[in-house]
Image 1 (tube, helix red, strand yellow):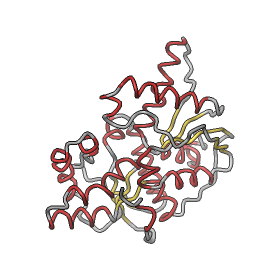
Image 2 (cartoon, rainbow, N blue to C red):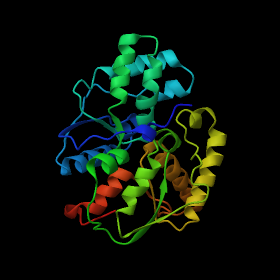
Image 3 (cartoon, rainbow, N blue to C red):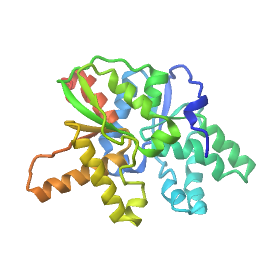
Amino acid sequence: MSTPSHAVRIYPSKPDDVYLFSTCLIDQFTPEAGLDTVRLLEREGIRVHYPEAQTCCGQPAHSSGYPDESRAVALRQLNLFSEPWPVVVPSGSCGGMIRLHYPHLFANDPELHAKALALSERVYELSEFLVHVVNFAHADLGAPCTVALHTSCHARRQMGSHETSAALLDTLDKVNVVEQARIEECCGFGGTFSLLHPEISEAIVTDKVASIKDTGAQWVVSADCGCLLNITGRAAKQDEVAGSTQPSLPGAHLASFLWGRTNAAEGGVS
């Protein structure tokens, strides 16, 4: 297994410019999380550049055992980030794919391997970047609330960004963070896993929803939209079956939660 990227990482000073790799799920389902990522970075005086030709990181094909197809998708991304700026990814899953797996995908082509390696060294998961590069620190303007943090498997085991996600929530002095039982377990999404094994996925996410609800959390926060959509979607289905019109477990991407709690113009709305 690859060594987690956070184990030997040396962080740069805060840059003037960064690239944003927004991810498919944010682009298609939760664009506000991408916009809030931009808002968080621009507030720090950083110019955010978004190459419009970017597509998928290639992880669905890679994790399904199709390296050639994954390589073809990854190849489209290699030349999009030509300036030597950090590439910020609001997803530990996609960040882990580019940082850890791109060099392996192109291991047999010296030129492309060099490009993939150079790109991988500039990739930062959002919470990692905010903690270690930006030194995020803003007043918590929201009302007191209790939240549970869920971290994706790749963010936890490949990027180590469960630590930085938790650190960011700890900066919010009106937010009580509670820990669900078996916090390190998967939510059942797993990208294509949820499509290939829907019954198993449903059983896993049902258990995850129950463990989060048992904490009394008012919100679930995650830095990965796949997990967030899976968890809140399952909770919403349970609400529908129960005839409830109020969401029993609302969720927010970490970027949107941070922006809402620290933006004076919004009155610190979570």
